[in-house]
Length: 91
Image (cartoon, rainbow, N blue to C red; front, side, top):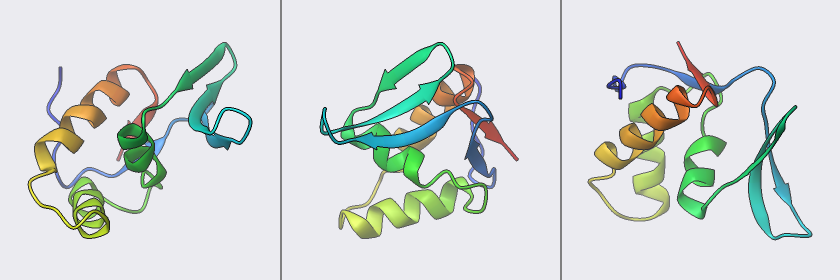
């Protein structure tokens, strides 16, 4: 697994679309061959992958939103997996 730097800027990859499915009450990542059902943590991270915020910005946003600290390793670990799965691109 490749390390993700805190200065990299993730965005949802072309061909993928993040959306909330009301019928299933869950966030999903849609792509031409199917769909990935996301757990709440993954959905919170991917919602912030807008191509503008870098990884540290995303960590800061999540830590503020959930009034916690120490999320950097978890966020970077998830983003590394998302990148390997081609769900996101990194700038």
